[in-house]
Length: 345
Image (cartoon, rainbow, N blue to C red; front, top):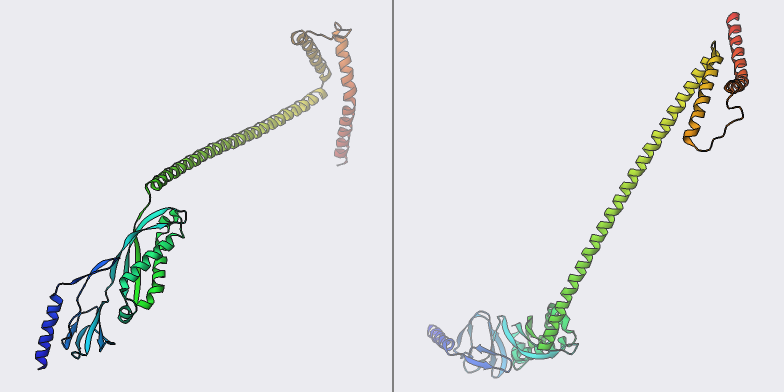
């Protein structure tokens, strides 16, 4: 008897599933739904479906996937809820942004039934209710943003719509998983102005980049001139240092040579006939000096006794003798001291 009932229930279930589905039409969307199964005592519930059973017009229980038994005449399958993720197209609608731009926008809504009991008795048409809620929420959220922010903050806009839908759909046993905006259509004139704005922004960027390149080039050229001047000044500094060092060394060399010449001259003057040699040297320098006066200058200053060369030499030797006496005296004293020290030894 049980086997016969199982076979009968299975046959009726297959006939029910093979039956043509009915078209469930709502103002927001259209989707295909299976017809309600008949109570055949033994029922097999497909996976990811929940059958809501009423007993004598009152909710009794929810049939889980697999084998289930019902009482004929008393139990009736009232609702069939799919637990799969449902995709609903949100129709295109108009919305006004914060800067008073009218937009035509549509989207896609992804939802899932979490509580079949609330979805069956909490709202008359849950999918239609969620669709209308998505449309009103989308218009409300778009009214808080300007046109530029609508395109930039698309992800945050989707997230805000999902949060608003979930706050209201908890009582319906439905959970909104995602909401995606498909297309945003702007008026043609606004679209043209946006294109002009984009072109102006690109020209601005190009001008800024060009000016930055020119500035970098000028900075590089100025930096090059600065480095060149620094290197040139350092070269001049090194050149002047080297030149001054060379001049100092030359002056020292000349001074040492002159001192050596003076020492040799003084030694020569102390020897025999040194005065005669000095007289001859003074006479030669005197004649040489007068020979250069006419060549180097047009103005000539001559003493009254120009022709008396012997007198000039005598005068020079007198001056020399007066200057040489102290040195000769000092030299004599030094020699006597040396001789006295030698004799005492």
